[in-house]
Length: 172
Image (tube, rainbow, N blue to C red; front, side, top):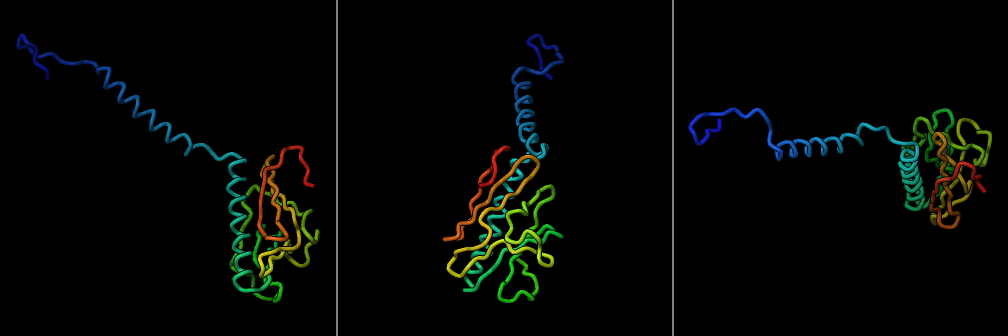
């Protein structure tokens, strides 16, 4: 308790301005950190994250084709909504552990597949060769809500690039 010059004690019933400013600053910092964590991701940010995951999956398949010196195919299973690595030389082989599931709420445009109707339970989309090149479907389209993203595979280098499509933009 503060003591005055006269020797009596006095009680403080309020906060000083610096104390109030310090508490407000701490609350603002905490609120600024909490808001992004509580907000659900937008369709555009979900699409960006999914595009990066799909490109990483395709890079793994391409790397395995180069590393093993054998063709490797990227296939799509409509029943499970999964992309997976397949060995075209041994179609009866057990499915690879290299697989990637299309996230919930996403659609894959099946019109761009080589075989519009799946043979059996999966569709081969494209193949990577030991030299890193590719063949097959050149353009894939994924959709999440009203956001669409186009993926293009370079037949010469096998690299996968992507770009967001506008609402009215068609795939050439």
